Length: 112
Length: 114
Image 1 (cartoon, rainbow over the protein chains, first blue to last red):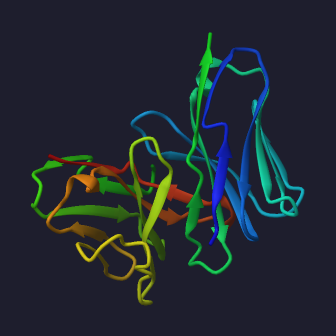
Image 2: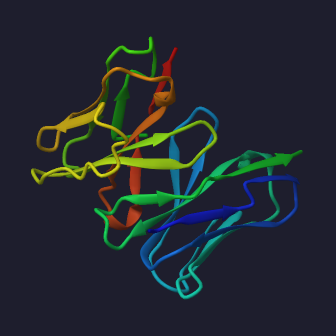
């Protein structure tokens, strides 16, 4: 059974700091996704990571994937208040109908 | 999200009543998913539709839950005899047009069972 674990589940940090969110998954997968969710809103796709060693960057966010370690990271550089949200990773199971298995989410609060 | 409309956005219902949630994607999305998100948690898969194939219902938590979809159009999720533990946000998602772009989610229906 594919399981996805994120840590930390809660993170409070100051603007300007760097931090990393970790996403571990238990079995082989083809694709890993990062999503952002603002309170009361739906999910916004951030990154789709398709292969080992994949690295994608958008603004102050950078995501990477190590399929051998079954680990993805979401790195935040010089955080700003607007990045406050809950971040989810989700993994596509190999034997599924492309359904996503989700981590519990990391609630990120960035203080001005 | 753009491309997927869900209604109602909020629904408060009494325990024991039936509810119907609607998902209306822009045409051309063959793959459609329903997920449930309980407060403060990640998403749980409920059901998957792919074109005219038999749906994957493996995530439905009980026989009180059912869903329908005709072709590539509207899908409805029905919960019969609602219970308080059914309270959650129900999200509909389609695979984005660019296959490598992931999924597009609707804004969800927040269901509260009182």
